[in-house]
Image (cartoon, rainbow, N blue to C red; front, side, top):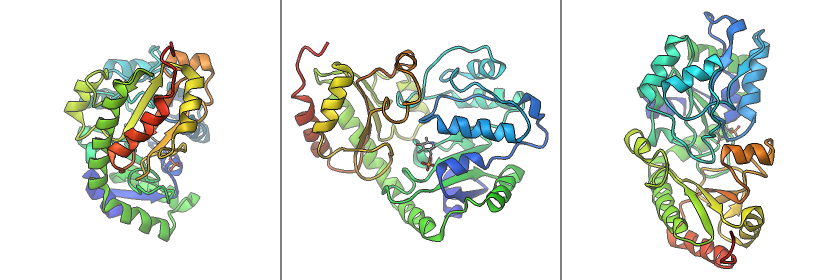
Amino acid sequence: VERRIAALEGAEDAVVTASGMSAMAMRAPRAASKPATTSIASPMTCTAAPASSWSTNCRAWGSAPTYRGSLLATGGADRLTAAVRGSSSRRLPSNPLLRVLGPPRPIARAARRIGAVVVVDSTFATPINLRPLEHGAHLVVHSATKYLGGHSDVTAGAVVGGGTLLASVRDRTRIFGPSLDPHAAWLVERGIKTLAVRMERHERNGHAVAEWCEAHPAVRQVYYPGLPSHPDHALAGRLLGGYGGMLGVELRGGGEAATRVVRRLRLARVASSLGGVDTLVSEPRHTSHMAMTAQQREQAGIRDGFLRFSLGIEDAEDIIADLRQALDEEPDDGE
Ligand SMILES: *Cc1c(COP(=O)(O)O)cnc(C)c1O
């Protein structure tokens, strides 16, 4: 399974781990880096967990990390460099707004210039839509729990790359123990065999459902990089092989509407995971972005009333029919 994942990413090698979180925790500091200068720049990711895993790691390396995660997010090389140096101030999470960071080459060059290791969490994109190593990343990490496995029946992770960086990840995995169990590895390998066809279907459903939602009166805004209304639509079109199956929908009726709609949904099931064959829905304020205050979420652009969908591979008409019965009951004057 490691060889398959490496081949998909165009990498020398890959290490699989027991979860996406353990994949992120296994990166060792570079021998050359001075611990005292450790700094992490990152978009605000799906949960607070990656951030606290990196911070804990940094402390273990003997430095108090300066984590810039909440500071940065989209924008080019200048923004990234500014974030690392502590002078950036934008708050734009990549998830669930599905922002696309780029263009990647200048970012990778700027990062390398300041001695940073460029790590891309490519869980949402998968190697079908993006191969970050081709754009200058040092390492790629995956939560294989999501699209690589694809059936919501396994927990797994992967670190992809090469050279001494990956060799040290392999060593640490052996020493600290988050090895992937053989049956889980088999499930991931089996999932990967259908990855390409699943991604095609996830995207087709993404487009269909995003367009349908955009036209519904109960919806204030739809976040899907495949829509021309998405701020990164052009960049995503150039960079990605496909726009994927993740979708953000903000309802006019706020948090109360979100709760009502989620209760009415039959086909879309409530769960905080993503990337499987079944359509899932979650409210970031109760799941991935629960750790933020309502005000912080508002500033970040994730207002109450936000629903995050992971579209499955069902018939798009069925997903839309489910949404229709759930949304049509919303009062027209939701504003
Ligand atoms: C789920 C997820 C993780 C964490 O992975 P686990 O397999 O649940 O440990 C990390 N990054 C992203 C983008 C994810 O979606």
